Length: 297
Image (cartoon, rainbow, N blue to C red; front, side, top):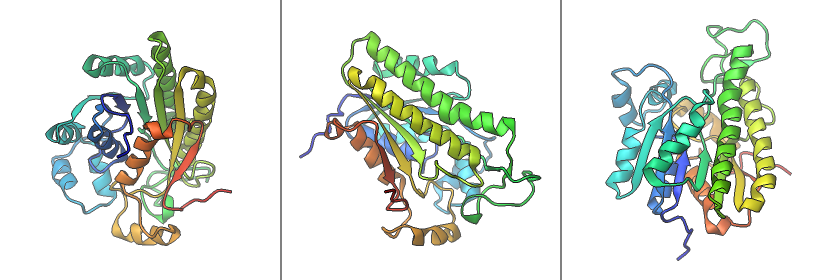
């Protein structure tokens, strides 16, 4: 039996309220290894009376995904506890830089010092360089479907970078500061990106902010290695987190050599591996998790 060495480790995961999401699957995967999991989340949109009922179904669509974003992380926490695991959750807007120390404080109060940080939370709103586009223009984003897009503005740019880049950088810095203060010798940071980060038409601020995350990650790996902290990036292909209806799945699948859309558990297993003792000599790496959707040279 392979022992990943994660029992009793304290794991902080951002973006964990979507019950079909990568954050939720990752929290469950760590809990299954005996780790204590603190889940951050932030509800986007106003909860509707149908949100809970819709989330219980697996009739995925853009409406399903939007409803899932309005839920708390309670059902994820309850599922982990029902399986004998340890989990707590707290809601906070990572677009507010001031919440970063508080997030670590709450995790420490619940379980002790954070040893594994998974930066999964992300903001994704379609925008473009094309002129004259507005939210009601009718253009569609990724793969020709999905939410409408608007022309890039200072607001759309800054909102993406605040959550997807700045918050990740601040979370890593806070993790490192606390790690060094207690003279710890073991730490893991796993950041989540997209395999479209280098060029993402119609979602330009999302893609660029993820590219910045990748740069921060490589620098963090270089600077924090002497402290025993590894930093790696999981770059994702198409993953079914509830946003793809059947039509979109059928359109995307032919571009994936392994012949199916990714599942949140596929990503969660890679994240757990990157935190494990088996990945102790991996740092500064970007690993594509997409069934072969992207194969760089």
